[in-house]
Length: 93
Image (cartoon, rainbow, N blue to C red; front, side, top):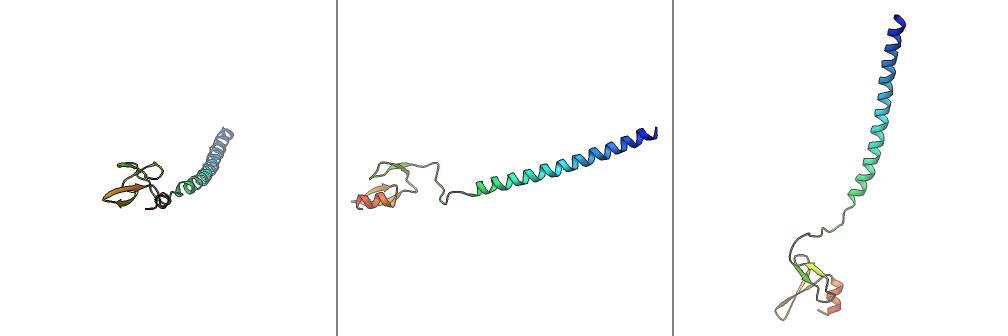
């Protein structure tokens, strides 16, 4: 009877120890993966692109840009929109 109790106690301690080791290893791998994905998500574009707003065509290339972020130039009282400084320069405005 004493052996059965001793084996039961040893088994309980062994299982507890194994669970502890597996938990530590799992947490370690989870932390490693979280650090890698956090580094990837930290790389954000330097300029946020708006997802809504009125679209205007670029006078030079025809690309549609959000009016709020487009380069606006007034020509003969009319507002002209450009997608970039490069297009504005090509248009000679």
